[in-house]
Image (cartoon, rainbow, N blue to C red; front, side, top):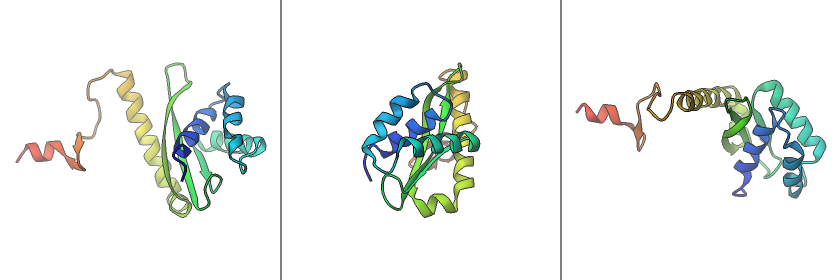
Length: 137
């Protein structure tokens, strides 16, 4: 899988909010022969309807990505969160992955709106273990 695949998926996610950089994004994707301008336009339209972007089998066979933009105060994309995986793992869990992305976008939005203090509902983690749980012992 190309190292920049996730970055391209994030760029597509950013484009789904009618970002005026759409033509710039299309030009960058020209190096991927399966993604024509028409395919890109269709993907962006589907992304707008779903609320998240999804590319499957377009860059690498049997690989894909699902992404959701993080919007700034002006409603324009400032970042995106993406998950890259085997196509069958994405399609079999599409709803759950989209919901997980949405939760993370909400967390990021809340953190940015309320400054740098830890406003996450989840305790911080280290190596997959809650720091709060280990601190109580």
